[in-house]
Amino acid sequence: MADCKPVCSPTVSGSKLSRNDEGEAIDSTMFKQLIGSLMYLNATRPDIMFSVSVVSRFMENPKETHYVAAKRILRYLRGTTDLGIHYKRQGKTDLTSYCDSDYAGDQDDRKSTSGYVFLLSSGAISWSSRKQPIVTLSTTEAEFVAAAYCVCQGIWIKRILEELGVKLEESLSILCDNSSAIKLSKNPVMHGRSKHIDVRFLFLRNLCKEGIIELKYCTTEEQLADVLTKALKKESFMRIRSNLGMCSLKEIISTAK
Image (cartoon, rainbow, N blue to C red; front, top):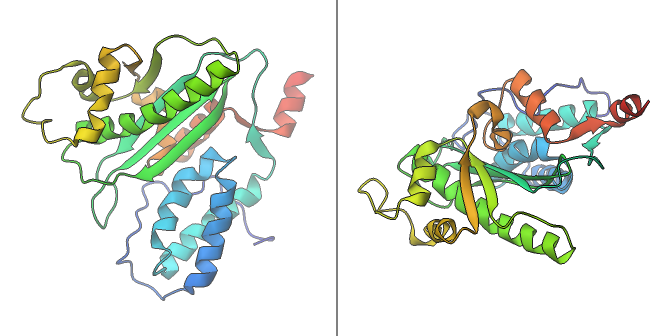
């Protein structure tokens, strides 16, 4: 892949992969080695997190279409080898978090995908993209489950930063683009549409009541976790990537001059 043609995004916008995709079977050992290498890069590259998460679902029985999708990630990385996360000295010191979900996005079991990202000093410090363990019955429920995962990580990060002497607001704000999920986190009444939600996710409501966390609304355009739940168009992908603090060394040098 050293001489491959670079691409501008790790996944084709709107593309969907399935276990039932037609095509020739691929050597699973080779495919697992490739995915393992990509997972290692996830630690510093939030821009490929979703794409790697998707292709890793097919390690047991990979097909040609899955291999092509994995190679596209390599082509994207080939063209962005100098890309990294820039933490600005004068950047925002508040801990900012975003959570989102892609309702019933998996083509095989119709489970949703959760995504969250935390920013500090204008750069991403923690991110995740994972398939939810349960089948949700609405976008509101999927967003609520995604927020619950985000909260767990957020509380841990907040405690670490406080131990390091970083002053943060008492309430952890989480930005979500689903107003119904926000209302559900504040309303103690169990409506018929939400009473089936797994009990383990209802602790989110208690944390909101105690003022430990607060779900706040943001528009879809402002939702940075969108890049962790679905394949976006080039313009949206590039905009969110930049807002995550990702840039090249050349950009940093040119800005400093």
